[in-house]
Image 1 (spheres, one colour):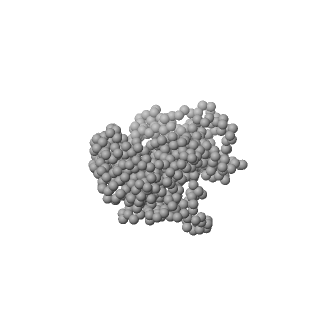
Image 2: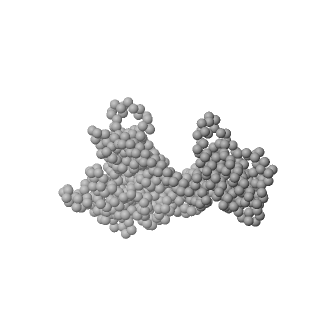
Image 3: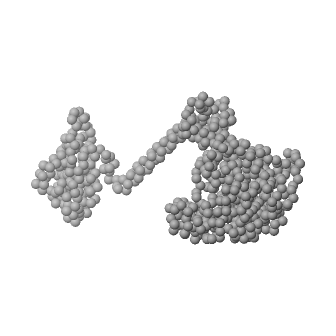
Length: 594
């Protein structure tokens, strides 16, 4: 019975021809669906033969979808058996050829055929066991299928493989596009570099006409000139010398940061690398953190920190290299007016002031001189390390500052101190060779603490610096003459300044090495930069590398210099004869040109 129904359906399909291209294109699509559904329908037919389509149902199908009726009948015939399916496929291929031959007629029509939504399956054809639903597709969707989609060899695994290949192709396209974009960006960068290889140096007329208050323009010009000086051969303007660029840079730095020409020239010699120079100049305008020193004669750092935190202060240990320093981040109460401060448990003191006392390392029961003691912070630190034993002479040439020393020592509970008001240069006459150790924190230009006094930027000139290093040489001679070289535990001098200039630091220490029988020793400090042995035209003693330098942009403390000297004998060294250049180079010592 089923075979007879299938034969009738095939005959009807052979007699009928589609009226438009839309119907011709719909048939292959339906065939694809039929081919995929056929394997599912065969097991069902083995269990129970498919019922014959009744006449009323055919009429309903004709009323609902007249154009799709042959297609649905073909689908029913295809579900019967696989041989009938192959016959239907052959008939559909013949129909497709006929439709292509008649395609010119459909193309000649002015109005395209309207799009129709076609129900691929009617409600009566659905099987209750399979539970299939209705599917609707438009004519445009049929154009996406190919002939290979209707072949019997196609399966889901091939479709997945084709999908992966498409993703890989898309990925390759994206990679190629990214590579092309990168190549274009590199070419554009090279063009920009080529355009900016040479920097036009403004003339004097252009500089005079430009507004001097435009800080952004100054900053931009400083950066550009530094880039030119970094690669001068390639980026300089033809006919311009290096000195012209450096002169303009020098003037711009003075205008931007507010320094006089002499001081800026010293800094440019000290930091020949442009980036480091800018970091140093910027750090000079930044305030250092507030730090305090714990008075170990009355309390310990941990107890003090807990007490201050309870007062509303946010404190932390200052650094690993100090056991008494605390840094104050913020405080709800005045740092210099707490009960702990008034009781002498701590004192306000910069971290740089701890360094010379740590290098001096005074021992109990010694006689120590603090030649320039005001305001007394370092003297209190010395007394704490000596455990309030021995004797500490706190001297200062200024009487008002000496009174401040007295007040601070009383508050800190120092009992072994003698405060004096005397010119330090006269100490050898008063107490010659009477001290085991001497601390000389010499008066200086203050170029390491510019943030405290911005007047230093304009007030320090060549004459002022020369006057200061002359005083420093006199003080260091008096300090070394006040030390007893035969001391069993001492015989040390620590020289320190809050300056970064070579004229006030290495040059002064090099001077005392030639005037007295002494040598430089290790400071024992964990941090710091080695001092200069060669600086421009100056050649110092090789042992000056044992000195230590501190910079605000490197160590986040005030600019400082520390040197520790050991006195070998109490005799004065005779003036050395002028040596030949060969002998001076062999000994590693040459007269400073400062």
